[in-house]
Length: 276
Image (cartoon, rainbow, N blue to C red; front, side, top):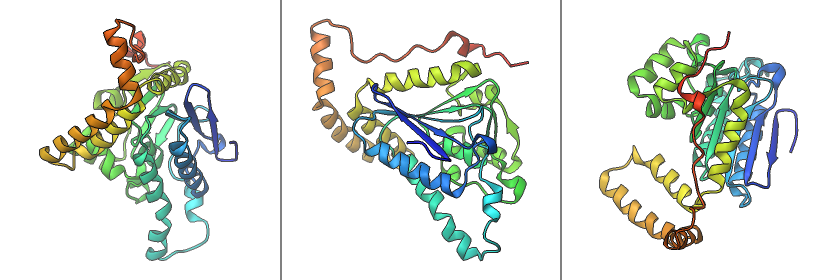
């Protein structure tokens, strides 16, 4: 599928790549892009041929945040009308966080505002050495959206989340790595290949187990121990009944190589170089 704001490619390897595709605007999130991204992710989530998804941006940037020109279109609006218009971003957040398939975000260039919020919904975030991130909302008198109030403190901790939101400051790849916001830092030319490599590894893994673990991990910070242990018992019974688990046990008993192997981290990830 190709259109003005989004490009979606599906491979025979079970990986779909979704590209925010407004490079002339640094992939700023317009209302139309939000709606199309919601629809695309919902469709990919329901497609049994898709087992992992990569989310990235065109033209050397991930997303510059909400399209400020788009925000001002249509003239003055009441608070009630503005609240109603936020429904599309609520739906986008729910679809992204509700995906039961692994989602890998690959961030290059700018990842500001709503763009960074979208990236925070991913399971794994990779960044290039030239990435520039910011919870920029307070600079223009707005508050974080696309679920960033929910995701950011869960990733970096409450105090750091407050500092990033209150200050609206920019931070780069190495700080994103230290905060746990990024999993790996890569040279710009290595970013897309590594994201696809990880996604292919995930696509070759146990889809049932990934879905169950993702659902449980997302619920864990809002649940107590007893509820998580009950969920664990139910999920294990389901996972152990899957074709993947049965085949994995057979391979183990037969001393055959495992079908699922996680791609090794690139050697450069431990010592990312700052571009000149």
